[in-house]
Image (cartoon, rainbow, N blue to C red; front, side, top):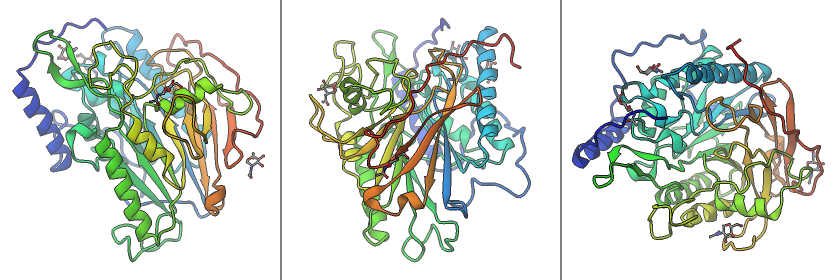
Length: 442
Ligand SMILES: *[C@@H]1O[C@H](CO)[C@@H](O)[C@H](O)[C@H]1NC(C)=O
Ligand SMILES: *[C@@H]1O[C@H](CO)[C@@H](O)[C@H](O)[C@H]1NC(C)=O
Ligand SMILES: *[C@@H]1O[C@H](CO)[C@@H](O)[C@H](O)[C@H]1NC(C)=O
Ligand SMILES: *[C@@H]1O[C@H](CO)[C@@H](O)[C@H](O)[C@H]1NC(C)=O
């Protein structure tokens, strides 16, 4: 943690650097490092980063969510690189335990940016995605607060990911201040013959996956001229990304004939609604999961409503527009977040909670499981699994999606169905196990 600080760059230089990053991500391929050579080859005949996502012929679509992998801790000692070896092992164990994965989601904090070096800070991406490349799996990321720091930026991580054909992470809101990982992925039926590129002529998506950037952390290569401190970045989904979401969803629904399209959403930092639900009480049988991060940290935490983040405010409320959009999008079944490593429950947000102005309309707010050996806490590592079936999406008034957590032990916990009665149905409580650190990487 105690690396010497670089002298602050002149502000103009830093701005040019940031703009150049954003421009290169959107335009021509970005040169992420010196003479980069992929070390892993794709399995024969399968490059799933190309072509649309599809349900399997049996009508299911399986998503595996890794979150808070926090690669790149303490590169200068033995402990840090060992955590990365352990985290790769978690990823491999989970992928091998799940026979049919259609998409891997990396839900933020891929890398612990504050400990990385400018010249190779994004190279950890290669270690993270190695297990997916070996298995011919495709992935999509959101970025978290630790993915943004003096020596690393979400834009640079995106560029590194996009060197691999299996990456689906992209940026659909071009404004550099709106964050990077704001985009959607449509999922089509197995037999859909004319999918994307011709939304009007082809079959509409059966499912939409929305990815949001909750930003946070610190601005790339910027130091405050007066204090020499890193410059904080707002830690909520930007209103421009929310506008884009509303507009784009409305267009997709119109193109699909006006029927809402069932959807799932992913964001690294949960909203204030998750905190309000936690305060209402997490029942071990109705919202099974670990509930150790109390109170949880939410978007806009540490910011004031007037935009200051000098430590004088607990919460600024800037996640309001995003919460409103999440609560008012028909067909949105669940929003998955990470960030709070000690919380792993799903909660149906179906009412007006004390102190809140936004009323939930039934969307489920879920945490996954801390997946990495980097980052705080020793809760057993794992990854939330989400199994969507066309059968469960048939009735818009009764949408149902199955989910559970696959642990690094191989066991599964917290299996629930996110359906109309979730929150009333009783399930077994989730054990709160910790992982003791192995002394070697085996
Ligand atoms: C990045 O560079 C540092 C310092 O040379 C080194 O210790 C670390 O292993 C490198 N990380 C990667 C992912 O290459
Ligand atoms: C950033 O990277 C530079 C160059 O490798 C390194 O000297 C410095 O310690 C790193 N960390 C910070 C916080 O500047
Ligand atoms: C945020 O949640 C807290 C905890 O329930 C609540 O007291 C507060 O009023 C909420 N604020 C807003 C703006 O939603
Ligand atoms: C929701 O799923 C649970 C668990 O499978 C089930 O017991 C319950 O009946 C379901 N509710 C509805 C409305 O189908």
